[in-house]
Length: 257
Ligand SMILES: Nc1ncnc2c1ncn2[C@@H]1O[C@H](COP(=O)(O)OP(=O)(O)OP(=O)(O)O)[C@@H](O)[C@H]1O
Ligand SMILES: [Mg+2]
Image 1 (cartoon, protein in one colour):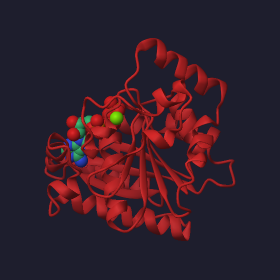
Image 2 (cartoon, rainbow, N blue to C red):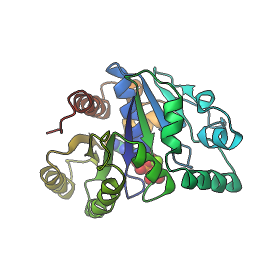
Image 3 (tube, rainbow, N blue to C red):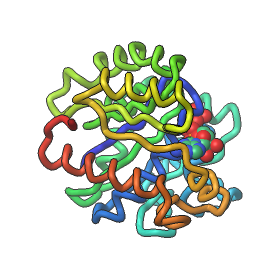
């Protein structure tokens, strides 16, 4: 089992969309994938065709003392999703207290799932520092930092890298961290220039880029990943390219170029 954490310091950069669509692309190239929602927004499940009325998930299971396994749901296209679950404010605080008291709760629970040896777990996280991000970084074998091609997003990179250095890089089971530039729009000069600068500066740690593509939100509106919604879209192509790069990193354990 390899654990891939999708993280960012800034909100709204596309972590949940990437967690869902990268999982779908990894399934497409032959992996067994479990996408895990570590964000109380509980929105990852919607990308997998799970009903908005479904309330089960890992937070509820932990509080009830039941197995996380029982809260896993099959997606429509071969992957699996473990939602955060719907909890009230008191329960959310209780769950976060449990996470604070046991820093490796996530890793323990994931190991207890007895997933196939070659399974991949993709963790969606809330933006910025939190008890969820700390758990995700403490468990991750690979961390993917999502950035937009803009100055505000770029400026937050040192903060997230600092956290990765704290929780990931000293562990012998940690492979490396990589950047994924999302919502790239080459039709705008500034966005295109910033993309080039980011690509240059992050060389060696680039997982790839995902273009701004309306198929991504449209797929979500239809409860589908972008590969199912529009397999020939630019977004679908980008996610498969990133999945192949990630696959190569995991099998070779060498940095991307
Ligand atoms: N490549 C893309 N092309 C077009 N729209 C995108 C793309 N990636 C994400 N979006 C849109 O951007 C918005 C934010 O995406 P998403 O919810 O995945 O971000 P997030 O980082 O998970 O947000 P949060 O920090 O709140 O968890 C959504 O409306 C999503 O559909
Ligand atoms: Mg999100």
